[in-house]
Length: 106
Image 1 (cartoon, rainbow, N blue to C red):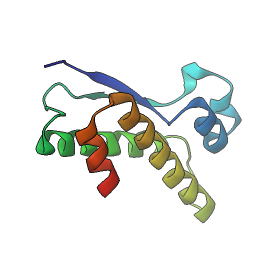
Image 2 (image 1 turned 180 degrees about the vertical axis):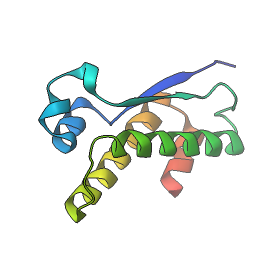
Image 3 (image 1 turned 120 degrees about the vertical axis):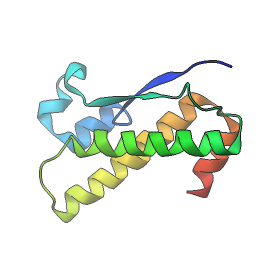
């Protein structure tokens, strides 16, 4: 079994730039990120993929909430878009049919 540790950034620098504003957009070093350790679960099982997906979602929420301090409706929509994009990118980068099935159900 491969051991995977993924760093989840806010989808991409484009998404961070769009939603975080100029302070984050200027430098990749300033982009918020979370590392997700997937080594404790088997992505090829339904339970393992579900646990990994939960970790990815939580990391995406943490990363995307770090990009804003306001709670306006527009910012909430931006956070939701950021989380969705970050989760999509993370799932695609893992390249697991089982994980993609879990993602499709969400």
